[in-house]
Structure formats: C-alpha cells, structure tokens
Length: 111
Image (cartoon, rainbow, N blue to C red):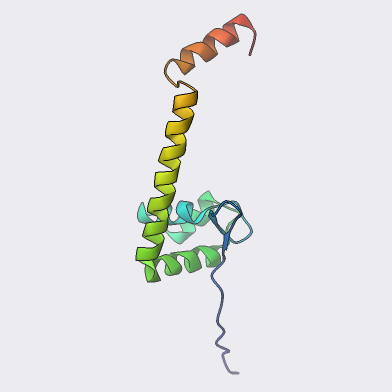
C-alpha cells in the first residue's frame, strides 16, 4: 500500500467584515493564535472550543508559524481596530458608573 501525499488547504475563511475565521466556525484566527501564544496546546484549544477540529487547529498553528510576520501584522491591525471601536463606544456611552446605574435600574424594577 502506498501512502498518498495530498496538499490540504488551511481551514481559514475571511468573512464580509474582513475577520478571519477557522473553517465554518465563528472562532477567529486571533483566538487560536492568542491561545497558542499564551501556551495552550492544540488539544487544550480544542477542549476550550469544541466546534474546532483538532486537525484544523494544528493546521492553523502551522500556518501561523510559517507566516508569523503576516499574521502578527493582521493581529496588530485587529487590535488597533478593536481599540478604535472601544474608544468610539466609550465616547458615545460613558462606561463610568455603569454598574451603579444598572443596579439602580434593577432596584427600581425597570430592568
């Protein structure tokens, strides 16, 4: 029996917002890479995100390791976008005192 060597595609898909997701899941490339960089094994990531296939996680990690500079640049852009959106939201909705306001709403029965 001969072992067939096949090229496999990396299970990454870019959604309409430019976010890269793993396979047909909602889990982002960011999530897998940050977990990996935080020291999680592929098995631990699979346990934490059961919608991911273990083989896909290994494939994504290999992709990251082969294209570290590109992926790091993508992650940096995503962090910058998240910070920008956070600042926009905070400028529209003051987060200070939110806990107290929510507790007051609950106490008054309007929540």
